[in-house]
Every structure is written in structure tokens, then in C-alpha cells.
Image (cartoon, rainbow, N blue to C red; front, side, top):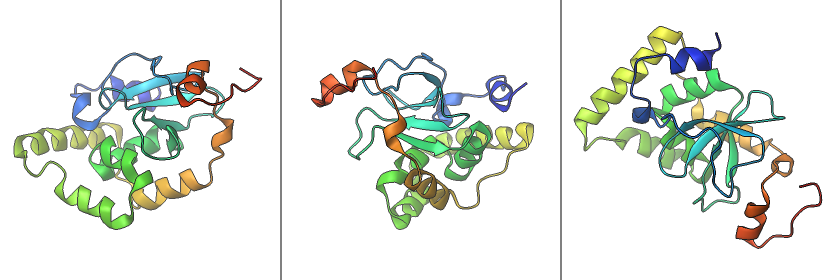
Length: 175
């Protein structure tokens, strides 16, 4: 059984960490060709593996203000969970691309502070992932994500025709 399958078999509320179950196809204009969605954070933001990229996990954000709608987030699902444990969910991890280190640290320090019940429930989910799957929080999550994204060749991701229509880009020949 894979780490992903073990994770999905846990009796937890996946929405508390931004990996809720949902449509595996994505269905957004920027969901890459060959994507298999592994979790949903909220309406639009989803996480997937993409055929041809081994086990790498990508964040897809159709409302991004950044250069790329799809960005690598972890080399594999186990590292994604390690990142999620360090960031207390997917929200901070997905936002790293547009933040500096201080913004990231400030967010982690204040994330959910106004909702103590939510923090307790989320922490119980994180504790269960750590204890049942034997995964530890990543030591330098900000640096890990930044390095992964800096070395990635974004031109290798293939998108559906709708992506090019929405953005007013010329459709590549290989689609």
C-alpha cells in the first residue's frame, strides 16, 4: 500500500489540512493534461500528480497572481505530507511562491489564531498523520519549496486548449 493510500484510509477530516477528496480530473482551465488530483484545498486550488513527472506533486491555483498557475510543491506525496506537517496544512505551502521568508513565518505564527477550536481539530489531524504514517514535519519548508520551484522547467507542463483560449495565448502544435 502506498503512502497516499494509507493517508486516504486514515479516519480524519482532510479538509482541515487542505487535502479534501474531490474530482480527480480537476476540471479547471489550468488543470494540466494528464493530471490526477490528490486533494482540494478550496474552490479551485487543488493538488495533483501529472503524468510524465514521476511522483512530483503540483499545486494548481486558477486565481493565481503569480507567473504560473501550476507549480511543483513536493517531489512525492510523502514529502508533501512532511511539508503539510511543517506548514500546518496546504495553505502556507501553496503561497510560498509569492512570499518572502518573513511573510511565510508571520502567516504560520498567526494562522487560525482567531479560531482556537479549528486549531485544535487541525492539530489532531496533523498528529494522527505523524503518528500513523511515521512522517515528520519538514525542517526547512520555505527553502525546500523555493528550491524545487526555481529548478523546475515549467515549459514541460502541457495544458488543455482551454488554457490557451482563456489566457489569449497561441495554441502549441503538440496539443
